[in-house]
Length: 288
Image 1: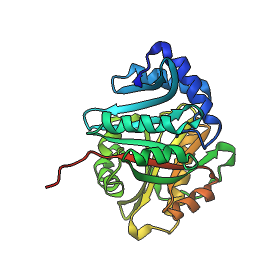
Image 2: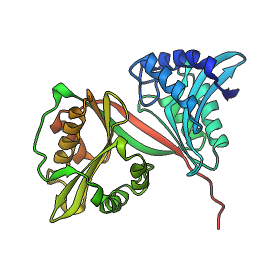
Image 3: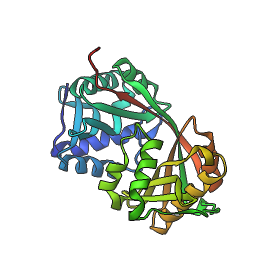
Image 4: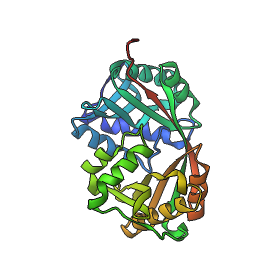
């Protein structure tokens, strides 16, 4: 049975979720650094009206945990740490995946796991989800950063946001973090752009929400500049800004079909740490 987890159930939920983080075959995505980090995330989500913390129970025994961010206005929801199933039990993944498909039938709903978690992936597909992204998770510690050139890349100014918005939304047409949402949370994002001939030809946007870890959400250049080393300049600038702001590590999830970005990240010192796959339930539309 699926039911909400209340404040007094947070510790049990954190214990279960943390037990699944030991191996990529049973963990969800992203993988958390500590049990306390998971507990803080669960506690934080319960304070938000758009948050959901759900448990899969067998009687009184907790078997699985699902932490969701829900945007009712745009009808979008995303698992903050996938589905955590005790012992990687396939039946828990199956029950909770079906719950997401039915309880959020009118939403776009996203679940994510390391590529090694086959049981969770199979459950999502069986419940009607479609493969959404397949990426390599890369990490860079400050001590490993190889500072290269970043000429032509500068922090985005307020006066150019409209121009940037057009570039961003064209580069990421099917992305939750569109330009409008970035503008709403502008203080939490570091955006840098590559200029050529007075025009934005490339950009990189980095989440600065976490106290110690930055995350590059995307780096893109236009067709004219692809493969000319601009990608490495963008990533270099993003990392330099993150470390200057006091971050200890930078994460970057690079899609499997982006070898140029992968090579550019490696040039800056990033190392692959895991694979990442996400699955998306989409609202069903009636045939015309």
